Length: 371
Image (cartoon, rainbow, N blue to C red; front, side):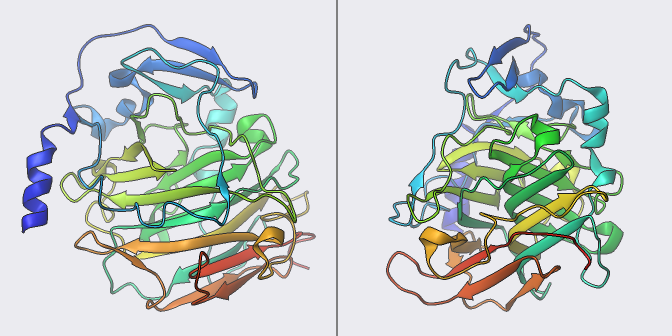
């Protein structure tokens, strides 16, 4: 009760109401050639969602300060620069990546991208993940350090490493995903970029990447979804990482995205049904996609996993948030790995000690999927 009292007392400073003011959009160009629009925080795309018409913006999560800060200092790798580096948005505005093509906007909303199915192969998507195996536990979030890689990906392919937080099954699956991706079709380049996804019907008619459709509320003034990481890991050399977490606020019920110790924004509870209450499932790992006439792209750094972190792609400091908002290592939980294609693999390393704790390594070269 004491924890929730403190959260209630801090709530008054967390919110702003949606105003009626309008401000012109200001385009800003970054050195990676992506263009972002600085938009009035009250007029951002999220509020085109029919369930968010009277939404009050939560400017920061009520759990900040005590949750998801464990092990922030690490010797495993360096954190890469990310966010607007050439020009910031003016006060009161937030950056949103510009999607110029209506066709591209439609292409990257919901129906093209389906969730994995543990009983039926999908030749267009492949996975190497480490996931919880039961749905009888309540989770408020998940977090991990993820190595930053830059696999070679062509147009018509993508390669991702991310965290999934989910509830439901089949057509009723609700999912939030966050990590990095290399996706030439979505971004117009081959940079490794902060990438998210959400859906409330197993990617049938809802959901999208980043802010392509209304849903995600951006609050950070210079770290938008779609930002490029300035550095990625070097095989046998310097490793770069990002600290990604998805956690539900105990007061508002919104699902907050935190990247490298910074609160980026959130998915409001109002766009969900099941996840409005809690999550029952999470996983860590890699995902790739290819058009049917393309080979499966590399996952991670394109090499099969090993224990040597300077030579492999990895997730470490994997943790989850309990129903009472404490953070725990995943080690006691019943978990299993899922590999959908022999061109990829995932290995689990427990109780390693030192800077390593528990970690997984994953990846692979890809190839001709289904053969």
